[in-house]
Image (tube, rainbow, N blue to C red; front, side, top):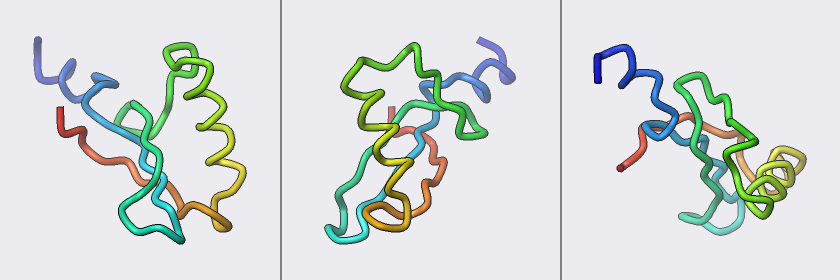
Length: 71
């Protein structure tokens, strides 16, 4: 795999929504380095959680951050 492929591999990044009320808890979804989530790659449950998290940003979850995956 070349350096460009590593940099854009969706499994290398996560979009993390941290809970505003329960430190250390939150939701994370695989994404690219720009925070784009491939919805078709998510399970139905993960898609519902992703859409829910987006709707409640500022009320239940902090603004999401793109982070390198631990994998």
